[in-house]
Image 1 (spheres, each protein chain N blue to C red):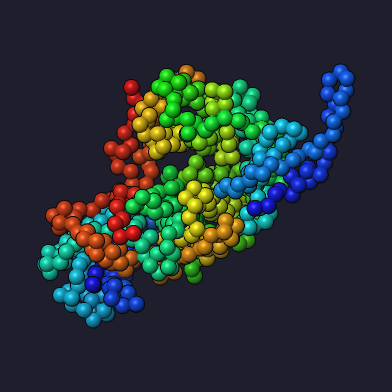
Image 2: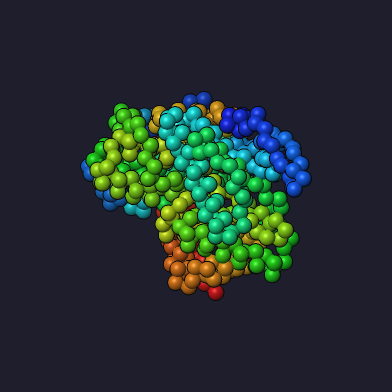
Length: 251
Length: 334
């Protein structure tokens, strides 16, 4: 697991900071690595300090199984889409990591680190009311993104961080712009499935409140359309018998 | 122990006879292949062919193994998942054999059989299994007594994507020429990445129908070279499968990857997975072409494993299940 060459270059760079009216001068490295790095399915993720800010650097590393030129285009495209989706979310007022730096040619994206606990780990400790209001918030986030034609691509409870009680949506690595109705429905389906597989005992409340939040932004008609499509996608799945498709949100 | 297995889930009627008493476990491997003249599999036509040629294939298998039904300990049959009319032919023949010769009948899930034959012939121990065929795209791993589905296609299968694209733009049928898919052949002359094609990983899953629609729309627009479209389509599709397989590896911490199913015979896909295995530091196993496609041996072998654990089914209850998911099956032999 290597460090992105473009990140390594930034480690060499020095930046001069000037603070306050007394112009206190301080020189720092642009990037300082932290001892925390892991490889994901698409990228190598590295905790860093970027201009003194606690951040993560996501590097879509070259995939030797793809033709070189195609791989470069592909990684640049994916990085661009992720950055664009993050900015779109930010402009909608959705709590997401702050985008700090993008080098799409290198496949590098730096965003602020969101301190907190994963919703996945927090669910068992949350009371019904609190859990409901968090899921309602998530519903509004997703509906907001969807209204702007953006899908998150992986909205599971592992990609939500509770920071000071506020749910933040993280990891836009699988996001897509110009989403179709199918894409929106798949997004909702992924959230539902993560709830069904990881939080079975809280399934009803989480789905119900999520849909409430979604409806409050997307409106009755649009929500209905998306949910109908979710049902169709589930039925279309490999060898799913009808009874397993049964949905829990028609309250 | 000797088990006769019958496969008839889609385009192949297969009869396999296996034993656990010898190193060379395959005693017979007979197949009847349905090849559509145009388009995809027509279930009625396929089942008609199976009904016509199936009994002969069973006789041939027994003859080549030098056995009579008396020496067979159990009859195994793939009861699903698959196409109803095709499944029913195999199931009817199996029920008939079991009743007439008084043999126990063993139900086998077709997807489990793909995994088991892979394990048997490659020697992989506990891999993340990538199951790719005309009708299936799934990432499987053995956890808590079952083969769990970690990721799969939300709509059409990888093989289906490639075949349909090839058919609609006039590259096939036949879809596979000299061991290579026609889309792979067409992609060889491709150079350029086409940005308009969508990325298809969705959470832990893939979804290919949007990619197919977009690729066909661009092909019809005449604005792009077909070779570039083939290349981009193929790279996006293969890369997405590799990506969800990598996710499963990360998630389960397993150290092996195994490719099974009809598409596993693709040399291009194999070389891509070799690179992937290198990057993630895991060992790659690929089922040999002979057992990549549907066959009776895999049903017989899985039937043997199940029968050794005492799994049988009452003939009256042995009905086909077109939508029998792999994760519904308990695996007591592992």
